[in-house]
Length: 252
Image (tube, rainbow, N blue to C red):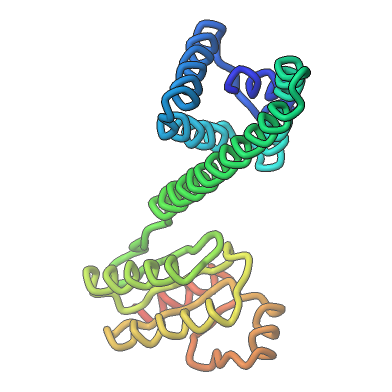
């Protein structure tokens, strides 16, 4: 099965699959033959199913798109059917039984490969998300008791919570009197993000610091007002330069 999949994968779109060398490919083919032999003759199916799971993980790491690998696996029906027909052409009953067994085997293989493919994809996405969190812009100290937090990219609930914690910690550690939060680089400011900003401002005030939010465009402001978000409690300035000038005045 591994060799057939490799042959079929060669027809996949460029960049969708990788390729092993001839020696590695032959070793893998021999291993696969032994696994399927032990499965059929000795009933030892678990090692073979584990090999299918490993294949699913490999497809995911290779970047093979979901429809592409499903097409590859399904195409094995076409690859295997002629061999079964040749082997059992004189015995229709055995041919039917063999075809049904092949279909069952392929269905099981697809299910296992698919489960591992999706699990690996989710794991990869999680790792990428964690890496992005590590690249978050830290809270910057502009000068004594004055901080700047430039936010770039999408803000979900978890990231918003982390940003708030980082800002409040920096306010405490630097005994800051004012902090500028610039959201120019945030593509979407919805009610959830706006409400979190309000909560951050209120928490900072409890710690004795004023928060100035910059980068809020007129269009976004109008949209938030239309949605019923109360921005009256937030000190907003159009651009970062204006926000820093206001912060200088407050920190003086």
